[in-house]
Length: 268
Length: 319
Image (spheres, rainbow over the protein chains, first blue to last red):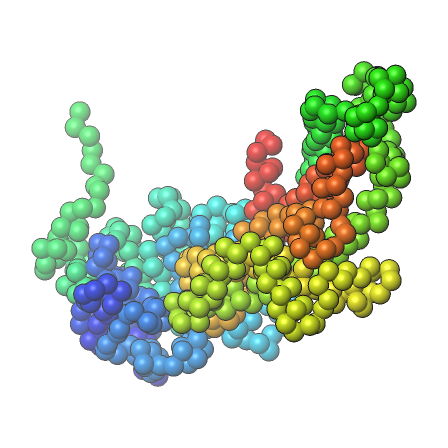
């Protein structure tokens, strides 16, 4: 089997919701290997989230045009029919988002939402099987008392817990790729580290490839083997984590690294 | 459960306040029930005697307490004008209003939900624009005018029913339903327009929320996203509107009653106000308040069933 899971060639994304078309992703190329954690960093507006949403098939279709190729597991996604795309969404590609507070439906129980991908992609499963898998999945994201969480509503959980629920729901079909779009931005620092460690463990244990999108270089450095730096819709630098941190080729990357707050000893 | 109990107590207190205010208001406003019962050319002695007989000379609080106790027992007093028990008068008309409101409500719910969803789904397209325009027209035309139009079209041109030929439900149930369906449509139309507008807006708003994107990311198709995710959230404001609408339909169809010549509560209220038939007016007003409050109570309970966040908020407030 090919060890390349995701191959993006010359991806262009253009918005047409204003008078003048806006070119927001320009000729992006990237490759993600099976089992790899790839980080995409860049400031807001750099096109990193849009690239991720294009892979997940979550871009609106009526006022956005895309061009290029997104080959996932041997299948071309950009030109694929929606029905074909839906077979992949939630099944082979799981997504977690930036806002755990609003990414879950407020009127549905956690269990129902975690199981949703199973109901869609594993219709042969019965209720008991789904319940078992959902509880297992909640357990695997290190939530205490998963049986109790199963029956709760989103507003009864904290932000960190909700993001774990999101991960559990994205991982329940054991997808080949997990797209994490700024999953820690809305969380406080200690929770951020826990989520990063959790993603690391899931990657190790389930062999899920992860596309980790963040503007936080220090987090990306901890988690990802390889990093892609995006600026103004283009990939400006790409390389192994250490390489980028020790020897950035681009000014922009250097600026991003300099922007990481450092813990310095106070001068006494 | 505690929540329900608390709501019940609040409801009773509200009703008590309303009954007091109503009783007080009719005590304060000028006009004498004894005088209007006897006519202006009565001798002062006769007037005094009747006032005594009607109990109008006793202190206000005493009269109110008496009235309230009887009211709770189901004895709403005797109509000054018609000399029959008020409860009988109301009970003979109530079924008409309840039937009318319930039918209009069902028509409204059954028509507005599919149209609202359809309109939201086809946002910006020709059919959606057409629905919006039609909605505006329906909303801005008062329901009595709609009633007149319906009477003209269905009654005089198409001759489906006889205008003014109200048939009582206990005489001819079939004829009653056939007659009542038209006023019900007249009442329902503006409300349909309002719910369609509200539901369309809230569907579109909900569809832009993050959890909808999550739902799509799991491989849901559009209709699954709509029916499993969006609709329940989008219905929340609509339920509030419907609660008010139901109460409004129960008691606010006075004009429609006139247009279609239906003997209902509204007509009793109008005539009893002009005759200063206070026992009737008081009973009808308290009844109206009762209907409004009970409907609101039911809406609160339904709201809580639909939106799990409600109880939580109430509990946090209590802490």
